[in-house]
Length: 537
Image 1 (spheres, rainbow, N blue to C red):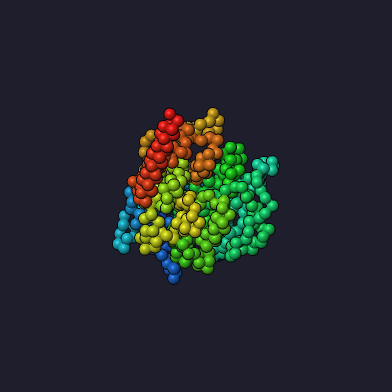
Image 2: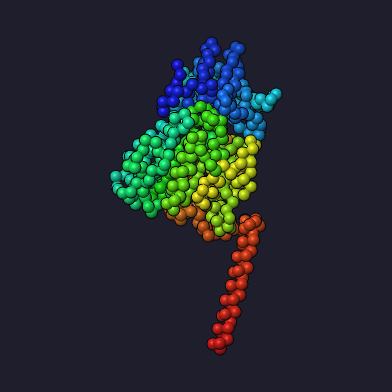
C-alpha cells in the first residue's frame, strides 16, 4: 500500500521501501527516508545502497549522499555490520571524522555513532562507508542517517506547536505574540510551502499586506497578515537543499528563541522586527529523501536570478514575496540557511558591495554573529565578488543563488547565506560575558581542546544567535556582550572592519580618496583658523 503524507501526496518513491530478512526488517518507507536496495546473506551484515535524487526518471541526477533508514527486530547486544554504497565520494568529510547519526525509536535523541567508520572508493567512484552497530534490543526501530534528520512532516508538526505557543502568550495587547501562518505557494508535487509571520502586537495597523499575484493560493485580501508600518522586516528561509538538515536545526533554534515568553531579548526582537519565515523551500526533495535536487532534478539555489513560476514555483514565490516587502522600504535582512560538506565550521557567504561603507555594514552583521556564537567563524566568511559569479562543479553560475539574486533584485545590504558544516569546525572562538547582572544570561566562555563535533544543540544555538546579533546591530540588546569584547561598540567594529578591507579593491581606492579629501579639508580648516587668528591679532 502506497503511503500518503500530511499534505495528501502519494509517496510512491524508489527511495522509500521495506526489506525483510528472517528476523530483521530494514525500511526507508517514511518521510525523508532514502535507501534504494538492501541485501543480507546471513543477518550479520546489511549491504545497503542509496538512491540518487530522482533515480531512474527522466530527471535523474548524480546526487547520492543522503541516506536515512531504520532497522528493527535486532536482538539485545546483537552486532550487525552495515555497508552503505552508491554514495558520492565524500572522502574529505569522512577523513575529518564525520560519523552518521542514529536514534532508537521515534522519540529518542539523535546521536553520532561511537564506532569506527571505514570508507573506500571503488570503480566508477562508488564510495562506500562501513560500520558496526550493537543493538539495544528495543522493540522500536533504530534509525540511521547521514546527518541529523528533520523531515517535512516534523517541520509541519513544529509549526503547529509554534502556533499553540504563540496563542498561549500574554494577554496584554502590545506584548502578545502575533503569529500568522499562510501557504505561500505549492510545490510541484502539491506540498505546502508555508510563510510564517511572527512579531508582537505593538504597532499593529488595521491594514493588511497586499496579495502578491501568483502567490498565496486560496487566499484573499482578508487572509493576509496585518501591516506593522514602523517595524523592520527580517526574512529567513531554509532547506532549498533537502539533505542540508543542519539548516533545519538552525531554523528550529531560531524560531524556538523567537517565541520565548520570558527572555527580554526575544521580547525586544518581536518589538523591533516583523519576522517572515519560510521553513522549507524544497518540501518535495525533503519528503523524498533527496540530497540536493527537486523533482525536476534541479539545484533550486541556482534559479534565483530568473525563476520560472511553473518550473520553480517555490523560488519564484520566495523572491516575489521578498520584492514586495522590499518595496515597502522596511526589509532589513534576508538570511538563507544551508549546510556545507567541505568547508569546515559555521560561516556565511555574503556579497561584495559597491562602496566601502556598504561593505563594512555588510560585514558587520556576520561579525556580530561571531561575537555571540563561538562556533561561528568570521574568518571563514566569504565576501568576494568572485563568489558571486563563479561557477560550481556542475557549471552553474552562483549568480543564481539566493543571496546574489535577492541582493540584485532589492539592493539589500544584509543578504547572506549561513552555512554549517555537517561535521564540525576549525576553531571555537571566545565568548565574552554579557554586560548584565541578570543571572539568566549565559556566562562567557573560553573553549579548551579540539573543536566539538556539531550536534543539534550547537546548530540550534547558531540559529538563536543570528537573532541576538540582529539585536546588537540595532543597539537594542539588553544582555549585550559588546562592552566586554575587544571592539566595545559598533563604531569600533566598523573601524576594525574598515582596516580589514583597506587593501582590497575597489575599497582601497575609495578609502585613499576619502582620506585625501579629509586631509585637504583639515588643511583648509587649519588655514582658515590661522587667517582668522591673524585678523584678530
